[in-house]
Every structure is written in C-alpha cells, then in structure tokens.
Amino acid sequence: MVGKCSICGKLTIGSFKTGLCRHCFVTVGNPFRRQEVIEKVKKHQKGKTNSNWKGGNVSYGGLHIWMNRNWGRPKYCDYCGILTAKRYDWANITGSYDREKENYRRLCRGCHIRLDRYHSIEVS
Image (tube, rainbow, N blue to C red; front, side, top):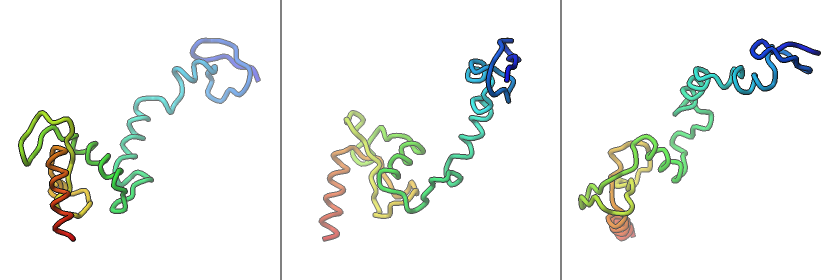
C-alpha cells in the first residue's frame, strides 16, 4: 500500500494506519511519546497504583530506594550533628521496617554502626 505522509508529504510504502511516514511517526506523531500521555502514565505508576507495588512485603533494598526517593537523601546526622561525613543513612530505630518516617533517623555512617551494635547487644 502506498500513501502520502500528512506531515512531510513523502510517499511511503507499507502499513499506513497513522497517515505518517516512519520518520515522522518516530519523531513527531507517535502518540505514546506525547508529553501529556507520558505524564498520565507516570501519574498512574506511582505508589499503590503501580502493578509492582508490594506494600509491606517490600525488600530491604527496595525500602531504602523508596525512602531516598520520597524523603530525600540525608545530609546531616540527627545524633552527633556532623555535616561533613562522607555517608549518611536512614537508620531504623524501632526494628519495624515500614514506610513511617518516625521509625527512622538520619545518621552518619559511624553513628549508624554504633546504633546497630547497641541493638545487637540488646537483642542477644
């Protein structure tokens, strides 16, 4: 089937459902690349509406990715107040691994290790 592209006017051979040549379809006319479609898809893929949402069954790594994305990466230590440490973590202080911010504190790596050692001695 031969058709004429409605954007560039070039003659095209093959499937012509959209009325666009291959080049114009990819660069301009692809309905899935339009900004409003992209925003709509992104909006429906966040949080509980995402088909991969695990709720309370999220893995340790997945939970930390979620915390950094939603609460931001920690930039200071709540315990010692240091601002120049190389690494800061969201440290769990209650033992309940959920998405409640009050169960976590921003800690530098040194304070986080000390907290974990204290909890391991306390548990055993």
